[in-house]
Length: 260
Image 1 (cartoon, rainbow, N blue to C red):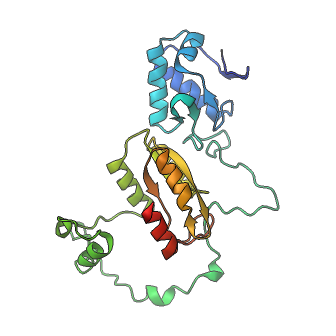
Image 2: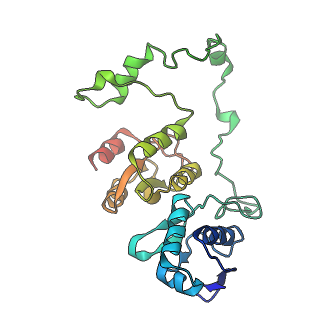
Image 3: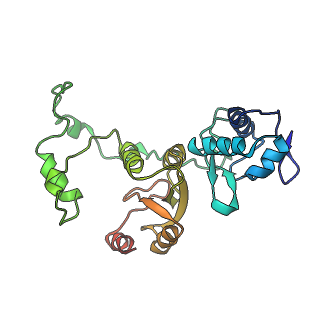
């Protein structure tokens, strides 16, 4: 039995391999014995308590970090992730709110009131319903030059060679960008409060989320500056209808964030 610094048993069993230790940590999180934000023992301390080689514990921590279950914070230690990708016995993600008070309003889904939406039928009736088969060009040729002018910063020598990428929603696009430019353990600046799916994505990629406070105009420049000083290598920003605050990034705030 392994004990944390508070004297509470959080792992039961006698692991002999890194894989077994990973399974025990994940089970402790699933059962609630370890909770988001809890600090795991240092490698050498856990190795001594569990009668394991330090390399075995370090390998288990690397696996847990790569799965998004724990995050390393340098000399501060290793902590259970804010939203570890593990289900509790109740079927919800560990760390998620399992039950809301009767007088609370759940904003986590981000779904709007249908009564506030404009009618879609007139627009849907104008959509071209001709079938697009495999092998056809996924990008509408007329959109390619427009997308290039809109998305590419001026002055890039190879701008004419840039092509559109078709993605399955905004999060798919964000994931492709992060996978292309970041590595597990990198720090990513995200809005605080943030869209829960963004936090799940960051954790699943093995990245570390750094909070950037948000007001009605979007992320605060001073908060973004602090995150960049803390080592953020990427920033995820919602330009309009930020979830859950509804903030809209205005022109002045956008200019201030670009300056940062």
